[in-house]
Length: 328
Image (cartoon, rainbow, N blue to C red):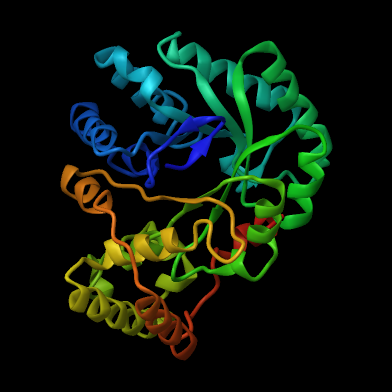
């Protein structure tokens, strides 16, 4: 099993964003059932955010509700929390005051029910050198407020600079059939060299690879922020999804299981570091689907590789208004 901070974690992680960062948040009672299912299925690395929802009802509040109901589950979960963002301005805020407020508020909400195992800034603040941010976070570790420091949406140079200040527990970056960038931009190679695990967010292409989106009418308003869901790109990308679906059907698995299996296939392979996919799911049946591990053969990997070369994804990875924060 993969390890982070010396603790064993499941081969699949669990992202909590979808429960609270939406127009109609999932009721706590329903969310807690899904979270319990994830833990029982082995997905014990959970990722939350201080900005995943409004200040009075974000994913930290959901965690507080969960661990109030299941206090004995706290030591079973490796909890990663994102902060350091200014959502209103679509930007990062890694000032000492903002990071301190985020960490202290999260700890206050959790009320001692659960510790923060890893804390990371959601994006790199372009106004503050990463060394200064790391020194602040290093202070949190020394004070016992957090167990380790993570990085999110970072480039290889930033990873190297940050690692000189303090060991990095994990690097969270986008990695999927739709976004294989880390295999080409030195991020995976750098993490492998430094012994840093990668947590792959959006391993299902922000939902496109789940097989649940079949027509443009299925695209939500939130998805429409993503260039790959834009109407001018949608049809071509759906062709790719359909081609992947046929490969999955031939193997007797779902599109989501195939996509997660592809991400896992690169874990420790060809000089890559440990890679743990981090899908989000708000329903028990989706969690059960995602946690059924599927291994791909060399022939299947080649087939998928050939498909990706012949059918490149259309559209940018992130919306234009946050391009300046990508691979920082």
